[in-house]
Length: 318
Ligand SMILES: [Zn+2]
Image (cartoon, rainbow, N blue to C red; front, side):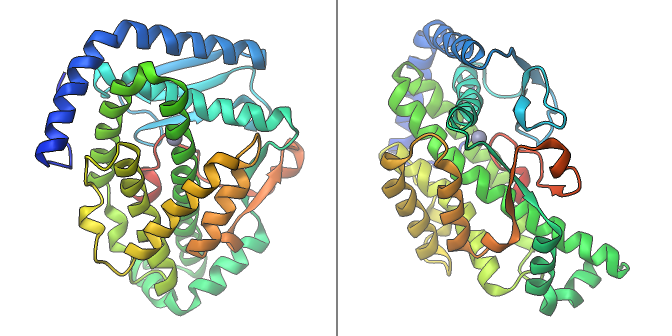
C-alpha cells in the first residue's frame, strides 16, 4: 500500500508515516478482528444487522452511514457504504469510524435523545433573509428563476450545515477511537492521511465568497480548517496540515472551534453530541438555519432533510 501523497510533508511526518505503515501491517489482523468484534457488539445492542459495502463510488464521495432509525420508514438494518479506494491497511480504522457514528446514534437513542437534522420552511426563510444581499451573485451563478435561486441558496447552506455537523461529529468519533481502540492507532493515522488529502483535494467551496455574507464565509472557512487543525492536534502536532490556513482571516475562529471541542469532549454523555454541534453552529453563524427533528417519520416527511450524512464531510464543502 502507499499513502505517500499526504499533505503534511515535514520530515517528522514522513518518518511517522513510515513507522505507522510498518506497524499497521504487523497489526492488521488484530485490528481487523477488533473492529469486527465492535461491529458485532453494536449489532447485538441494536438488534439490527450492520451491512458494510466497500464501493468504487459510494454516495457522498468518501462514504455514507445510513442509520436504520433515521430512515423513513425505519430500515431493518444499518448500512455503511464506504469507498473501496481507501488503502487496505487503513480500512479497519475507516470501518471503526463509521461504526462509531452508529454507536453515538445508538447511545442517543438509548437515552431518548436521537434526533435528525433537517431544514424546516421557517429555516429556509431565515436562510434566504441572510443571503438577500447576495441574491445577485446567486442569480449570476444559476441564471435562473427566483425558485432556482432559492434552491441554490438553500442547497449552499445545507452543504455548510452538513459539513459542520460532520466535522463536529468526526472530532468526537476520531478521539473516541484513539482512546478506546489503541490497536487501531496506526490504521487510524493512515486513514487520517487519506482523509486529509481527499479533503484538501475537494476544496471547491473556496469559490463561494461572493455567494455568502462575510461572517458566514469566515465560518465556513474556519469550520473546514478546524478539521486539519484537529487532526494535527490528535497526532501530537507531528503533522502540520493546518499550515495553509495559518495567518488567515479565519485562523482565530478555526482555533476557537478546536478549543471548543477539546473543552466539550470530556463532558459529552450519550445524546449530548447534538448540543456540541449546536455550539459549533452558533460560533460559525448557522444555528438558525436548521432544526433537530424528532424521530417521528410521518411528521418529518414534509420537511426538507439535510444532505445524507457522509463519512468525512468532504462532499459538504465540494
Ligand atoms: Zn465521520
